[in-house]
Length: 176
Image: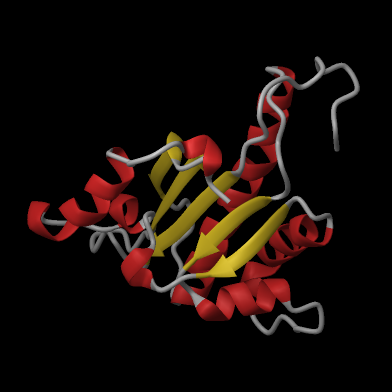
Protein backbone atom coordinates (compact mmCIF):
# COMPACT_ATOMS: atom_id res chain seq x y z
CA UNK A 1 0.00 0.00 0.00
CA UNK A 2 3.01 2.32 0.28
CA UNK A 3 3.85 4.19 -2.91
CA UNK A 4 7.22 3.30 -4.47
CA UNK A 5 7.82 6.67 -6.08
CA UNK A 6 7.16 8.97 -3.11
CA UNK A 7 9.91 11.29 -1.87
CA UNK A 8 11.78 10.46 1.33
CA UNK A 9 9.83 11.64 4.38
CA UNK A 10 11.18 14.71 6.16
CA UNK A 11 10.28 16.33 9.47
CA UNK A 12 8.50 14.99 12.50
CA UNK A 13 5.99 12.16 12.25
CA UNK A 14 2.31 12.99 12.33
CA UNK A 15 -0.77 11.24 13.68
CA UNK A 16 -3.93 11.01 11.58
CA UNK A 17 -7.26 11.02 13.41
CA UNK A 18 -10.74 10.76 11.95
CA UNK A 19 -14.15 11.13 13.57
CA UNK A 20 -17.24 9.66 11.92
CA UNK A 21 -20.96 9.91 12.61
CA UNK A 22 -24.27 9.42 10.85
CA UNK A 23 -27.65 10.96 11.55
CA UNK A 24 -30.43 8.51 10.67
CA UNK A 25 -33.35 9.97 8.69
CA UNK A 26 -31.94 13.48 8.76
CA UNK A 27 -34.14 14.55 5.86
CA UNK A 28 -37.78 13.78 6.71
CA UNK A 29 -38.88 14.26 3.09
CA UNK A 30 -36.57 11.68 1.50
CA UNK A 31 -35.61 9.64 4.59
CA UNK A 32 -31.91 10.02 3.79
CA UNK A 33 -29.27 9.97 6.51
CA UNK A 34 -26.34 12.37 6.71
CA UNK A 35 -22.70 11.30 7.04
CA UNK A 36 -20.29 13.54 8.94
CA UNK A 37 -16.53 12.93 8.80
CA UNK A 38 -13.77 15.08 10.27
CA UNK A 39 -10.08 14.46 9.47
CA UNK A 40 -7.34 15.82 11.70
CA UNK A 41 -3.55 15.86 11.45
CA UNK A 42 -2.07 16.29 14.94
CA UNK A 43 -5.36 17.81 16.19
CA UNK A 44 -5.53 20.27 13.28
CA UNK A 45 -8.52 19.99 10.98
CA UNK A 46 -7.39 19.27 7.41
CA UNK A 47 -10.60 17.99 5.81
CA UNK A 48 -14.27 17.47 6.53
CA UNK A 49 -17.17 15.75 4.80
CA UNK A 50 -20.87 16.25 5.36
CA UNK A 51 -23.25 14.81 2.83
CA UNK A 52 -26.54 12.97 2.48
CA UNK A 53 -26.14 9.24 2.01
CA UNK A 54 -27.22 7.97 -1.43
CA UNK A 55 -29.26 5.05 -0.03
CA UNK A 56 -32.11 5.30 2.47
CA UNK A 57 -31.37 3.22 5.57
CA UNK A 58 -34.04 1.96 7.92
CA UNK A 59 -31.74 1.36 10.90
CA UNK A 60 -28.95 3.28 12.61
CA UNK A 61 -26.61 0.28 12.14
CA UNK A 62 -26.72 0.49 8.34
CA UNK A 63 -26.41 4.25 8.33
CA UNK A 64 -23.37 4.19 10.63
CA UNK A 65 -21.72 1.45 8.56
CA UNK A 66 -22.15 3.46 5.35
CA UNK A 67 -20.52 6.42 7.11
CA UNK A 68 -17.68 4.21 8.41
CA UNK A 69 -17.07 2.88 4.88
CA UNK A 70 -16.88 6.40 3.46
CA UNK A 71 -14.47 7.41 6.24
CA UNK A 72 -12.36 4.30 5.61
CA UNK A 73 -12.04 5.11 1.91
CA UNK A 74 -10.99 8.67 2.75
CA UNK A 75 -8.52 7.40 5.39
CA UNK A 76 -6.85 5.20 2.77
CA UNK A 77 -6.45 8.18 0.40
CA UNK A 78 -5.17 10.77 2.90
CA UNK A 79 -1.90 9.05 3.94
CA UNK A 80 -1.07 8.37 0.30
CA UNK A 81 -1.43 12.06 -0.53
CA UNK A 82 0.66 13.04 2.49
CA UNK A 83 3.39 10.52 1.63
CA UNK A 84 3.65 12.02 -1.87
CA UNK A 85 4.17 15.37 -0.16
CA UNK A 86 7.03 13.89 1.91
CA UNK A 87 5.21 13.82 5.25
CA UNK A 88 6.21 11.00 7.64
CA UNK A 89 3.24 9.21 9.24
CA UNK A 90 3.72 7.69 12.68
CA UNK A 91 1.28 4.79 12.62
CA UNK A 92 -2.08 3.60 11.36
CA UNK A 93 -4.86 6.18 11.36
CA UNK A 94 -7.32 6.35 14.22
CA UNK A 95 -11.02 6.25 13.41
CA UNK A 96 -13.43 7.19 16.19
CA UNK A 97 -17.12 6.35 16.02
CA UNK A 98 -19.96 6.59 18.52
CA UNK A 99 -21.91 3.46 17.58
CA UNK A 100 -20.62 0.65 19.79
CA UNK A 101 -22.26 -2.12 17.75
CA UNK A 102 -20.59 -0.98 14.52
CA UNK A 103 -17.18 -0.58 16.18
CA UNK A 104 -17.39 -3.97 17.93
CA UNK A 105 -18.52 -5.86 14.83
CA UNK A 106 -15.74 -4.22 12.81
CA UNK A 107 -12.93 -4.88 15.27
CA UNK A 108 -13.89 -8.39 16.43
CA UNK A 109 -12.58 -10.96 13.89
CA UNK A 110 -15.12 -13.54 15.11
CA UNK A 111 -18.16 -11.35 14.52
CA UNK A 112 -20.73 -12.47 11.98
CA UNK A 113 -22.78 -10.25 9.74
CA UNK A 114 -26.53 -10.63 10.15
CA UNK A 115 -27.56 -7.65 8.02
CA UNK A 116 -26.93 -8.43 4.35
CA UNK A 117 -27.69 -4.89 3.17
CA UNK A 118 -24.49 -3.58 4.80
CA UNK A 119 -22.31 -6.38 3.42
CA UNK A 120 -19.98 -4.24 1.29
CA UNK A 121 -19.52 -1.56 3.94
CA UNK A 122 -18.90 -4.21 6.61
CA UNK A 123 -16.16 -5.94 4.62
CA UNK A 124 -14.50 -2.71 3.46
CA UNK A 125 -14.05 -1.46 7.03
CA UNK A 126 -12.91 -4.87 8.32
CA UNK A 127 -10.43 -5.23 5.46
CA UNK A 128 -8.79 -1.90 6.32
CA UNK A 129 -8.57 -2.87 9.99
CA UNK A 130 -7.04 -6.26 9.10
CA UNK A 131 -4.51 -4.52 6.83
CA UNK A 132 -3.59 -2.27 9.80
CA UNK A 133 -4.46 0.88 7.89
CA UNK A 134 -6.69 2.09 10.70
CA UNK A 135 -7.66 1.48 14.30
CA UNK A 136 -11.42 1.78 14.85
CA UNK A 137 -12.26 2.90 18.39
CA UNK A 138 -15.48 3.70 20.24
CA UNK A 139 -16.05 7.09 21.86
CA UNK A 140 -19.22 8.45 23.47
CA UNK A 141 -21.43 10.58 21.24
CA UNK A 142 -21.03 13.56 23.57
CA UNK A 143 -17.37 13.95 22.54
CA UNK A 144 -17.62 12.85 18.89
CA UNK A 145 -16.51 15.85 16.85
CA UNK A 146 -18.24 14.53 13.72
CA UNK A 147 -21.58 15.26 15.42
CA UNK A 148 -20.99 18.88 14.44
CA UNK A 149 -21.22 17.87 10.77
CA UNK A 150 -24.08 15.37 10.92
CA UNK A 151 -26.69 17.03 13.12
CA UNK A 152 -28.50 20.34 13.36
CA UNK A 153 -27.11 22.37 16.25
CA UNK A 154 -27.79 25.62 18.03
CA UNK A 155 -24.82 27.89 18.66
CA UNK A 156 -24.85 27.41 22.45
CA UNK A 157 -24.88 23.61 22.21
CA UNK A 158 -22.04 23.25 19.71
CA UNK A 159 -19.72 26.10 20.71
CA UNK A 160 -17.77 24.31 23.51
CA UNK A 161 -16.84 21.44 21.17
CA UNK A 162 -16.16 23.76 18.25
CA UNK A 163 -14.03 26.13 20.33
CA UNK A 164 -11.78 23.28 21.53
CA UNK A 165 -11.38 22.14 17.93
CA UNK A 166 -10.65 25.53 16.38
CA UNK A 167 -8.54 27.05 19.14
CA UNK A 168 -6.22 24.20 20.21
CA UNK A 169 -3.82 25.30 22.92
CA UNK A 170 -0.27 23.97 22.79
CA UNK A 171 1.98 22.37 20.24
CA UNK A 172 0.20 19.84 18.06
CA UNK A 173 3.50 18.16 17.15
CA UNK A 174 3.93 16.95 20.76
CA UNK A 175 0.64 15.01 20.88
CA UNK A 176 0.90 11.36 21.90
